[in-house]
Length: 484
Ligand code: NAD
Image 1 (tube, rainbow, N blue to C red):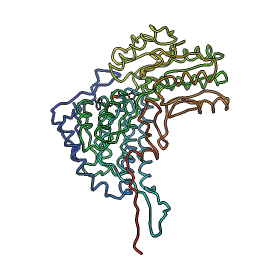
Image 2 (image 1 turned 180 degrees about the vertical axis):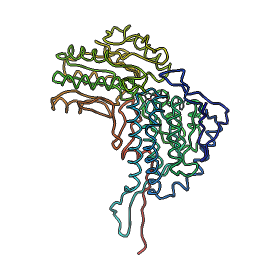
Image 3 (image 1 turned 45 degrees about the vertical axis):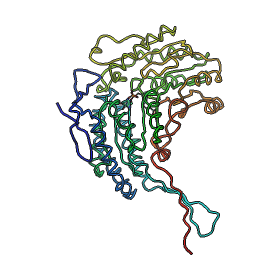
Image 4 (image 1 turned 45 degrees about the horizontal axis):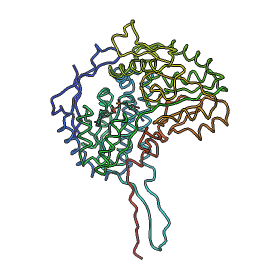
């Protein structure tokens, strides 16, 4: 069985804990992908010390040179897209076509931030005094901890790593336990692209051990976290207590409003994609649909039919639309919500019960489920499920739809399906979401624009594009009175 090590101070190394964890294919639990190092506290400490030592020289390297290393990493990853995509499908379960798309997006993210190396990194201001130059410059923050989830195991780590590195920070990267192989590839690609030792350290292992050790260490000056609200808020409290910088991207309960004038085919297609692609395991997945009364029946029937027609299976199979849930615990959560929804009185249109037969027992498969006539305040409509489950409710007007859509703690993404520009603009004005789509699915993000949510979905900061600079740099304002 192949073993995958930690990357600490520029060298691949065994874990001091002596612990190795098998990585299981969620489509077929008999397929063990490899054994992965489980870092102990000593490894995390060594990784942070290495990053701390590497920081002065890395920060002093001209930004353009740092960008060149990212360019090289982009080329290396591009040459490896198929290998990385297959690794992703095998350990996370999403379809190969989605995994290829995500890896290609990873290449685009690296290229975007490589390009940022030649952008201005400060501003010159007018001043009230003569013989003075007044300007700002951006400087790196220091050692940054990156904690990432399993659902976008290439895109999310890279949209944190690329800006962290290009702006001159050094990194300790702690990926999710369930997707260590894709994380290993990312670290390997950056390592091979020529990062100096200690600039990037990969600490595979459990959230409790590795995550806690990073959170507690005062040499870690900032942490960027994507994952669940419970873990995120806990990290935020601890970091704020010691005055460190923190950025959180967390859950969603994303709505779509379908108005009477919607193109029915577009509405069904976009809701299906948003709810079922990646097995609903996207923070931006569609989970609530508010449908105007005039089109409710027609839309529900068409959506139910579509959900029933989806092919479920191993993501490696080109005919598969939806792969398995990522883990047994995720599968159990989804099945539990199917019961909760029915107990609360929502009607099952499609799915609703565990899948049986056809090899489903070998993996963590879950049924694409459509609930009808759900109560807006029910748990089904309020809590993040992170599975292929969508709940529908009728609305009389757009205003009622916006009110229902906003009636959750989250505010990540939202969409409207309509042909009326007035309704669309009123929706854009009134919806509480960081990402708004029109005649589109709720998921999907381009790499060069801000990404993040309102309300409990984030820490009110944004990732990606120019926004990434705010977290990964700090501003120095310089008052330079020159000799005359
Ligand atoms: P999670 O919170 O369980 O884990 C996320 C990461 O935190 C993992 O690397 C995990 O090992 C680590 N971790 C766990 N306990 C920790 C601790 N005590 N200290 C430090 N680190 C710890 O989340 P998950 O199950 O991996 O991901 C699913 C969640 O992520 C969903 O809620 C989803 O909405 C959210 N998500 C949000 C976005 C976004 O951009 N808003 C994107 C993807 C996923």
